[in-house]
Image 1 (tube, rainbow, N blue to C red):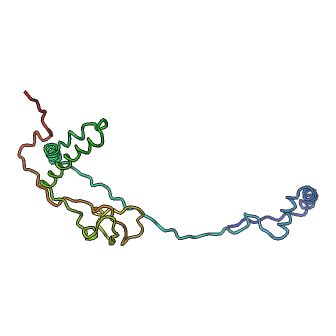
Image 2 (cartoon, rainbow, N blue to C red):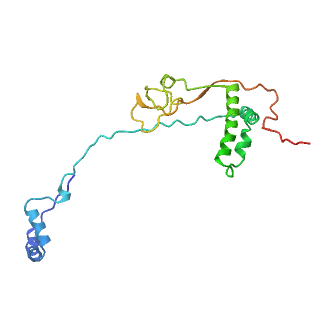
Image 3 (spheres, helix red, strand yellow):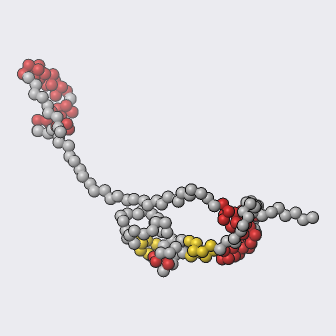
Amino acid sequence: MTNKIKPVSFVPRFFGAFGHFLKYMVSGDYAARCQSVDQGEQFAFEVEPKVITKEVEVIREIEVAAPALDTVNADGAHQLLQLLQQEARFIDFIQESIDDYSDADVGAASRQIHAGCAKVLKQHFTIDVVSMDVVNTAVENSRVEVPSGYDAKQIKLEGRVEGDGPYAGTLIHPGWKVTETRLPKITNTDSLNILAPAEIEV
């Protein structure tokens, strides 16, 4: 909605004409403005506002929240840490600072720890890539297509996610999931928090 200039009556125009005449003669800027009005140009508040509409592409990011657990089974976690300590001395390695060791020393120790950890995983778990056709038949860094309605728990899209799919992208990692667990069965869980007993030679 624009504003309109109200007309001025004769008497104010008569006396005002002398003042505007002198100002017109003194100020070139004022004279230029008067000429613009005389040519029919409108003031800014008289011009009807222009409405500009533009379609904006909506880019959304899909973020899957971590599952909330009502209870935590610490026994299985303690048991796994025990196995990793027994076969690979995993906790000893993690708890010790490696700042004073050379890369060669750390590499030699890591080789033994790697072998022990691999033994634990192979003996007590069956681990496979996520069960999705788009991943099972592809290799890393290859182009894949993710269908609409994909399982966001098994596939995580990185970058700019636009629309509802399908999506085309590069496979960065195939993902892992446990298909079978074979941890030893135990009847007494009282000492599971003892990951490794203190060793004393007498």
